[in-house]
Length: 202
Image (cartoon, rainbow, N blue to C red; front, side):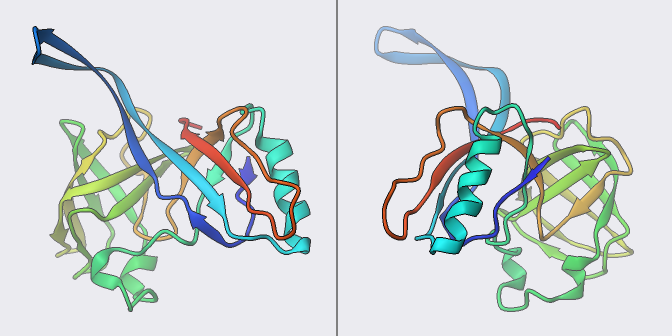
């Protein structure tokens, strides 16, 4: 597994990609069918790279560029949950939870969390089960009590994530691979590199 290089980034928020077909009657859309599981894609761009960082990024592009090796997407630039902006060191975020159950694919019950943990619509969490990882956006949030919290998330939790999975509320992680041919860095003074990552199970 390859780690992201530790350099400044100016672009790289995860986006859900959905595969939907649309049935039409004349100019009117009549039916919408999601024919494949959604997945995460990230268009990454670094800031201008000083000389000592150029070789580091070049090595990453060379190693990951064929798309045959998994990249651990664990960027430090992803924001903490909304309730903790300005309070990033809050202990509630460092206390990882444990997945208790998943209902209908989208409702997750999480235990072993700090009471008062506040997660809101739009926040991100990640799940890890063995070497498998997944990322989810909170659709219906909650505040933890009695060491537990229940959330509704998107996309659905995949079957390879099982009860007992570690749940992260900061320092999120996702297994990804680089799209072949997407990595580039110009031969310039203070160049900026760019590449595209797509989600894989492990």
